[in-house]
Image (cartoon, rainbow, N blue to C red; front, side, top):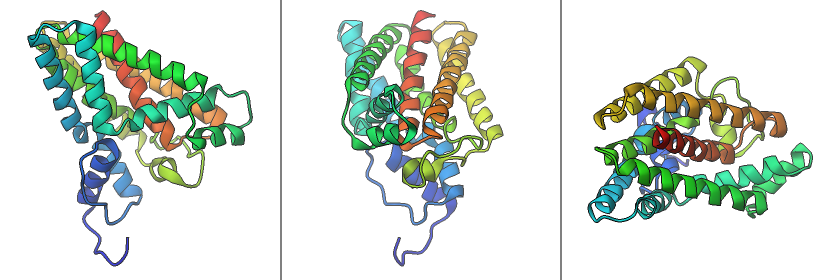
Length: 262
């Protein structure tokens, strides 16, 4: 980082979180180390507040204009993708291609690193984007649906604590995965999940739905994300930055399915 003086841990962590999870132009952190990576991952849902607000505004305007739910949801998904440079979607496609490949660990990692999108990745993107659009559009049509949509977007970013939890190793010695792997203590990861469940529960209750349905959606999403992480560890030997991004998209997709169904 040159001769720049090191900032405080919280300041650098906030810059790292904003630069990683949004397109907001911020200064680079002066230092990226384990304490800063830990706080940045824990701040991910707060860093995503601009994304959540953008999605909430889009669905509120779409609903007010009388647009079909699917179109409203598709516009929200577009806003989220623009607000993240589609970084997490790219991670999802690369992760699915790597995990679906019938090769050994090194070739799987090479496939993920290449950046090319294979058939499995394309299918994953189409399915995930369609489900997210339909789910967000359905939720938006409910009372205070815009609020729930914004909360779901922010809470989905809490999924990063699963691949970054202390028991999960990095798959490689470099890259984002190595920088954030094992940075979040397991009790902190569980605490984030509890807060996320409470947030979705309260947002659900605001729309006259039982609070426990929102909380249950977080539990289901967490279980699916953990299964993705376990699969990555089994086949790749650990997590990469792509796996972290994939967990975000998987979490949002599952949240959309469960909340929309409820």
